[in-house]
Image (cartoon, rainbow, N blue to C red; front, top):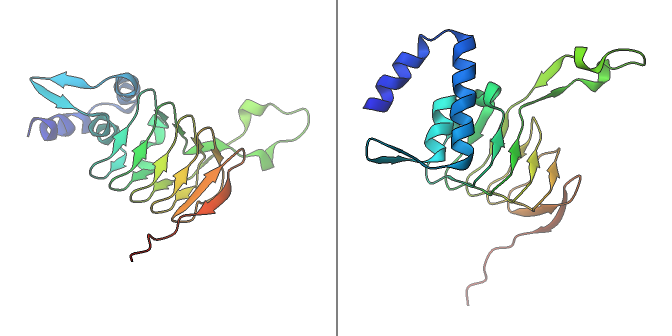
Length: 173
């Protein structure tokens, strides 16, 4: 109930103040479990406050970075595991608009949603780029750079991430 009241208050805060405040909350959520008035608030709850769509039983490791300014573009379904030091981005520069003798920092951003489907796993130091959907039950290996959609029930590794193998159903005898 107190969390709902807090969200109602947040809605009326000016945008520039909200961004600074969300950054601070995200910074806290990366490295700690917050104890607030005797109740433990998990990282997934803090991600919800900043705008992410987070399902049930989501586990988020320490020092996970995500695109706080575009958090509303991140959808994490139930039973997802995100290991420590992963990075989830929803924006990138539009390199098609980059020409010689022009300033890189003047390039426009491309915004695209990231969707982590039910039961997938993002391993340590993996990077999920904008516009990527990681399929149900898929596993992204440690240190992988995911630039394209990951099919359901596959394991991807490498930079850029490539399918290592497909996960098969258990044979019942």
